[in-house]
Image 1: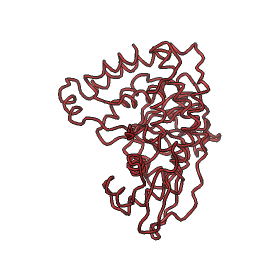
Image 2: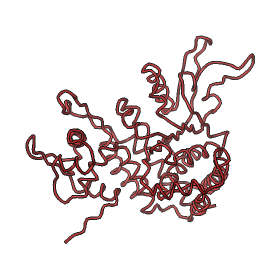
Image 3: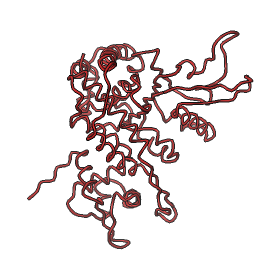
Image 4: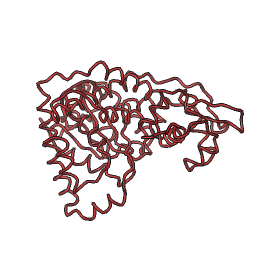
Amino acid sequence: MIFSELKKSIEPYVYSEDDGMLRTALASIISNRLNLGDPIWVVLIGASSSGKSQVLRPLALTDEKYIHRVDDLTENTLLSGINTGEGKEDVSLLKRIGKSGILVVSDLTVIFSKSSETRNAILGQLRMVYDGEMTKYSGTKSEPIRWEGSLGMLAGSTPSIYGHFEEVADMGERFIYYRMKEYDIEKATRISLNRNVFGKDLDSKLAEMYSEYITEATLSAKETEIVVPEDIKEKIVQISMFASNLRTPTSYDKYQKAIDRIPVPEMPMRVALQLMGLARGLIAMKLHDKGTKDLDESDMAIIEWCAYSLANEEKRACLRTLAQSTESLTTAIVAEKIGLSTEIARTSLQHLSAIGIVTRSGISGSLTWEISDHKTLERVRRVENIVIEEF
């Protein structure tokens, strides 16, 4: 089965005008399974009931020995030190996973609903897991519990994840995002009403299709060296620099209503390694689908969209509005276009200005804004599919 056949097979059950989310999920799983680089942690971001679960739940069923689904995380989920009985093995999730695997988390925001102490403990553990080694001391054991290995992650979330990760920016750096694109809601609703398979039966049916594709694509690339061409590497370098800058947190004083500190840009190396791993997964898919290792424009569009998805809803709305114009815009015009108050629009524009993506002109009360350079402007227009007619 090749991807076009997979897409056709799932069309009666899952509607999507953008196959980028599924391709991203599959590429991350294939890359992690083939150990093609650093572990890839991907968050699929979309509104409630938007279709994330029709990707995540079935994928968690494709290989129960390698892919493990959890709906909640506690301080003792990953390493607990608790045995099921005398002579039994540790029941910790990482011990059951072993040296390598993939964790599927249906809703990553459950972590942030916990107390700050519990949340910080879990996030601290996840940092260690991403880096490939975790040690925990337990009151029930004389020796510390250790795990070493490579764990990929595939998670779902609503857009609220942006606000949560802005609070713990260093944790957010370990993830790349894929923000679901808009689609025909009415058509999607009609398809969901017309299908005759639901719930667990639907998950099982989709899992069979996903599993067949993942297995065949992984086998096709298993004995082949996956090398990212130099020109693609260079593009990923540029995309990563844009992405890390876009995600750089800023300190905002709500009383002064202004950025009160010079932001320190995030270094692009970690996101570059994540995107490089994604590129290798896409190459493995392309090798299976078409017998070639060459990534095309649609593949690069996925990588670039993952980078652009690191910006929250408000920042992307401001950038989209500025990119649609051939001249600088006032704060009031931007606010009107994105449908938020002038104050909220100004805050997002100030964030973008502080990290150098947007340029501010004029004086207080009559500020105008534009995207800072032609390269960034063209990138935003490309990912947003904005075409400006030249006269």
